[in-house]
Length: 251
Ligand SMILES: N[C@@H](CCC(=O)N[C@@H](CS)C(=O)NCC(=O)O)C(=O)O
Image (cartoon, rainbow, N blue to C red):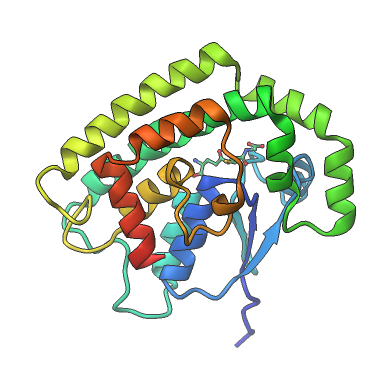
């Protein structure tokens, strides 16, 4: 039987969707290698692999590439090292899928847009270290040299700006209200009686607002002033405290 190569997970250090995939792979005991990519280079790697989109994370296996954090978790569930360790042990798979999609599409997208609308537009120098960390020297140098252009492309592609940031902020508040209400019945997990992929999704995607001690990147990330004030004010929300606890116990 051919020996399977260790899967390679391609990530941006700053990406909360990449963190979701990393956490799930580690929790499920999947051995893998991390490969950090510089912004821009990731599009040529995606093209080389024949992927339909450029978005990270993607997981390189012997025979194929899996793109997207949810698809990566689907694969990991089928190849987990420990049969008793699952992230999908819920009786209501449909509800779990819906919740994960809501978190991916709303909190995931809008926390990123809210953060970058301030950080990338007004304080780009503070974000550069997160975009260059974990890269080899030559990639750090090209990212630093091209930062002005990279930043402009990101601003256009994600539609960033003050108004857009405020629009995303309102949406975040709405979704955090919903999450606070969901957790108000004292439940430990969002879906079912054990940690599931929905919890990992929520915690990873909200982590930029919490910067949990066990997060691989965010403890060293500078938070811009308006977001810092918000994070401080939101810190006592049940949803943010729950994320802190989840990182503490399961990451
Ligand atoms: N729903 C996707 C979202 C992935 C995503 O938006 N990735 C961003 C980083 S946070 C990305 O790679 N953006 C660059 C691009 O699309 O070229 C997932 O869960 O994997």
